[in-house]
Image (cartoon, rainbow, N blue to C red; front, side):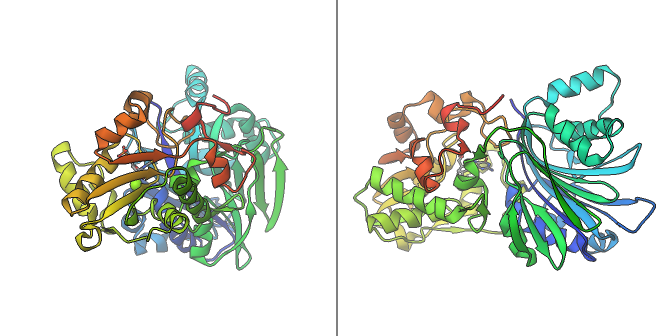
Length: 455
Ligand code: 5GP
Ligand code: MG
């Protein structure tokens, strides 16, 4: 099974309260990863090149206490929130990764998955390299240190490393004097640039810029390296031309609806997905409800297009932490009800259309249908604002191997009866281009089509 990394990154150059800024930035990227988090800071004026780093397992609010934030002095910082879905849920794998090498200290925070990390790592290990973690990120750090020995600058080293690594990445590199941001040549992972009172920020999503009160400058381009040094910004072309293939699942599920990725508002994309569903899979029903949070915007679009009223069908408990998400099989049913509970007075006696963003194994939606029927819904029709998941993701999104994907082993009518729905409708892959407002297919939809941009 592929190792999945779904992460968020946030870095800032030239802020007196750099750790505080990164803290709030990570807070608003918490949806991108709840397993571990961390912040590394350094002082640009300091000749010691000292890097302070606090990281650990858990949520931002748990790991990064007030005392810890205060101890993270400096004016440049990078931070990371991490969620891995297979093995390797250990403190050593928390980021940022801080390494010492010939030119001082290098810290990196990375979102994404390399498709050739194991090959690269084996080559290094065969030559005697040792690694402390099982992350792709450490391979990147090692390669940058290695390339730096034969290149004039760390950004040149990053450029050379981009010629070696394959896959999806949004990368932040902090050297003693520079903050460097790099986005993979397909733009698979999102990365934006912003500014706060003269300080430059790079982060995974625009919602984090808004959280700290920063202005959005622009998206980092696929294959682009941006360096901030002495307060000046320089863009370097990695020279690797691939053409934009951003991850479409960011719009469907992963990103926050208040973020704008590569010029397209996530909320708009989700509403449009709902509108398309309403046209392609109409339904004679009394109310439309969405599964919080990622199904809500699509449900609003479905309601607007169909004229069927949108209702709030569920209450979501916002205080359920990540540790609650993987209970034992016996506890699972109970856990579901604690996380999400239908509002009986809304659904009772009603024919309900329920919208969710995706079906992976089919457990979530089956549970919700069951809860809705118990709460008195007379019919439950399911509409999914993405196509069936048929292929694993090698770039870092949590799509498991085929054997675990219900759509690989069942037809749509079989899925419908297995989850206990009265009807089921999905989007088709071709609809995704319309969902993005006619985006000329500048996105990766490999998890739905098997058309991988590169393996
Ligand atoms: P299932 O229960 O079918 O296995 O999973 C479907 C549910 O998982 C949906 O409610 C969807 O919102 C959520 N989901 C889809 N993709 C991901 C992912 O990459 N990570 C996490 N944590 N949840 C996901
Ligand atoms: Mg969900």
